[in-house]
Image (cartoon, rainbow, N blue to C red; front, side):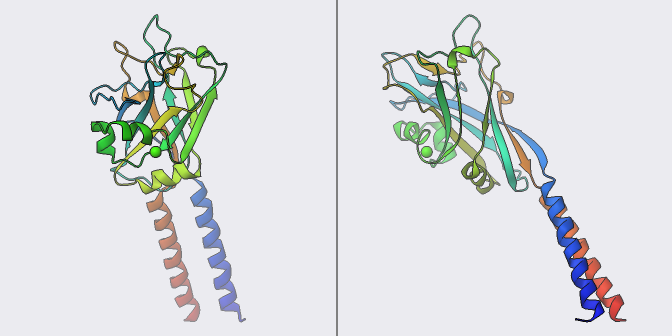
Length: 236
Ligand SMILES: [Ca+2]
């Protein structure tokens, strides 16, 4: 190997190292929810009601919730992230309770079209909100939650992949308490934020680590151009 190709390999190595380094410098992007709601096991759903109640009501039925996020303006590839959910409850009411010391709230893939979920798709949507691949969960004592308590739900690899696949459109995620007793046999619920304390978009958000794609491509393009010019100059 003569001197010039050796130097080229060294430069290319530096370019790759620089690119990798930049790739690790992800931007933190915060996206508030754009819609939310709940479904009862019977399929009951009120499109105008933004409350995201989830759980069991004694002698009634159990409920699941959903959140929608707007990615119609795409961001770069998401490499890690957390779903933050604010627990809301009206003054003087117990918005979260359970006879059990611990409950788990999980978030799940939604295969129904987002418009069907928000508009009202009946019992099949209720099922969808709590089945399929789980993207993350929170476990704790419902009885310790107060108005404004924050639940942090780290997203797993499947959740991150789902978000990346949703770029350019809307992304819906379902939620259910996975540790409920049989439907309608106990009071075990969370997020009982009925009016006059309706949720705002800022109550639920995604905190995402996103790689600034255009910047990476720009650097790589400049670096390759630089190598090309350097090669031409070396040969001259
Ligand atoms: Ca599902």
